[in-house]
Image (cartoon, rainbow, N blue to C red; front, side, top):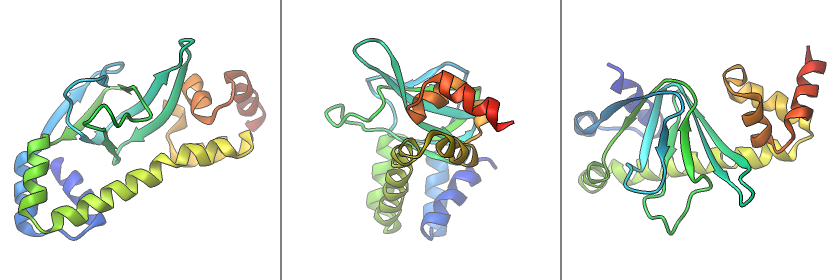
Length: 186
């Protein structure tokens, strides 16, 4: 039943045949992750995940050891990971921020769907375009005045479920500045 959420999500991006839906559903793997678990940190990891429930962040540490949050994914969003480490993602690590359920498919399953069904390439293009648009969100929000950036952030993400320091890092402001914005907000 829960796999239908992912299939329905993909069907909104591109019409899917019944055969594709059946083959896709048979390849899906459901996984549960605990808060704080790292989903991706160099090595073999499936390249696509669907956040069925929960919240996930992407981040990296700079040379001084300071953490920089580059992305958030919430329920109903797709996480794409580079399978080739020469094409590094903007995040070294993907961490689960609360107990979460994610759905994935193996790389071989993805290749099978892509080469077997004609909608595979079209769906792939739509997924990549959607991911690119979401990845540009951080640049947009952090370019706004901090109050406006935080207002927009709250409309897009479940801010009450995200640590203040993570939101500040994402918006490229200090936690103190974000606290000040939140104090004046109320």
